[in-house]
Length: 229
Length: 256
Image 1 (spheres, helix red, strand yellow):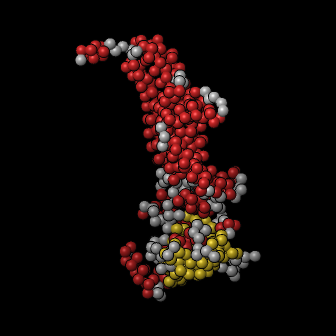
Image 2: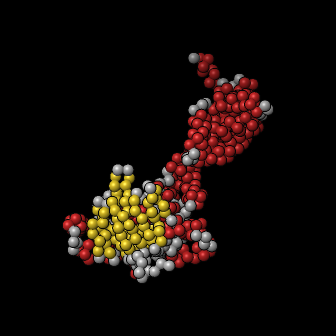
Image 3: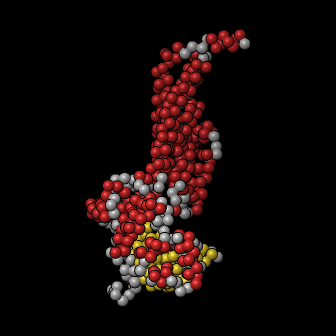
């Protein structure tokens, strides 16, 4: 008990100031990675959502299988598989950055396809009737009536998915990429001060994610009000 | 080719419609003249709305055929419904729940189909849309979104959106049923103005006073067939058929 008290007494964050550049660099890498993967995952997610609604059964099955596989396995396992196994099939080494981008994009796409799908599903039959009565063909209907509504409805959830990716990116440290978590682990190992280091790391993740989740709530309210008819 | 003086605008022959075992329409025959305003009344589940949706090409039919302006429009052949898309363009429809596109401004709601499917130039479509909105007293709403409008305004926009495409027959499916009572009049007023211009209409409504005001002809539909068909004074005032009589008495009793 005494030792524990002594341990608490010794908590001191000041030593971290000399690592602030490393921490900022780590955060930069994390954000960079998140933004790239978010972009790829959006495109992949939308394509998957459309494919899952395809009238050609094997196409719909394949897309569904893909989504279920990536939702049903741990991201860390997916990452290791892509990092260690994929190069064997491709016959070439993948950098840890490429592995990370591939992994988070494939995973994010699977998650986001669900968000797009529920956006598409939430459009009532009446919108189809109206489009039909106005003589809009399938293409015009999809591009000008269904897609914008599906995307608008999906925006808050997609942003949440983006925040999810930002947090999942901490796993990338496992393949030795110098993002925020990896920098944190390195500082912790070198200084043997995990309490201070991981407290600060957690705070940094939170300070980035919190405004975004607030933004999601605000957008959700606004969009729902706009689309309420 | 089509002679409005001698030929019916629309002629429905032996229209049958079933959802599986459930028969909704069991042989509807109807000739509609140009300029006629046919109000369809009847109990819920009697097939009124289905009839309108069939006219719009939104529902398949199990048997029968429809001609429009002397041209084949809809035919049922071996369980498949063939709909002539070019004839279908001559129908306009307004629904109970407005069905405006919520992500588009009022102006764009009106312009979308005209520009994308009728090949109208944007400037031309905009002019036409603004004229229509002005006619319906909605010109200041052109830039607004549907969620900012009252139910009555939304329904008037929906009418304007259908009028953009110059329909030869307007189908109104219970367009005031979802409205607050104080908003009904503004929508009915617009419809009465269209009636004065002799725009042919088929109207499904539960509002018997409005039916009497706008109809040139009233059809009582029940059990999937036309029970009574005649001028509004007859069908709404002094019906010949006992089933119609019972329905009218019940409705007027409730409302009166």
